[in-house]
Length: 166
Image 1 (spheres, one colour):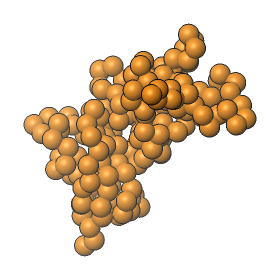
Image 2 (tube, helix red, strand yellow):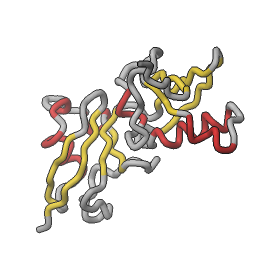
Image 3 (cartoon, helix red, strand yellow):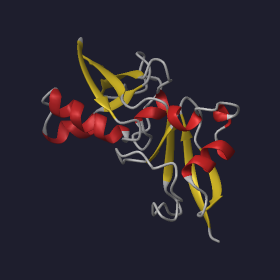
């Protein structure tokens, strides 16, 4: 039996590293490694498991080995099937839905396209979690990392970073 090491993103929590047996089913993994599922008889229906940057849900009755999940993959556990991302820019909004496992780098690209930002200028823009632009979105994180179940949405701000004064 082989163990695999993965990064685990669970909605509204910091990512963490987990090591699991590759013969474990996804359903068994949920029960052992996601505390929110404890005592919930319908946890397999409520929670979906995805590989980072993949839109498809993992089948809960299959093992990680059969699903070809490997070392250093990142798993996203989320109850939202889609996350609505609202991007504010220069007084305008752009709203689009994404799978919870899709990286924010895709949101940035789609947003820049939507606002017709081209050329060298594209590289100057970032997404921020706060209106005051004090907290940058990690583009390698999945959309679901910043959204809670019930709302299934996140609001971010597109801007060029503000240079430090002084």
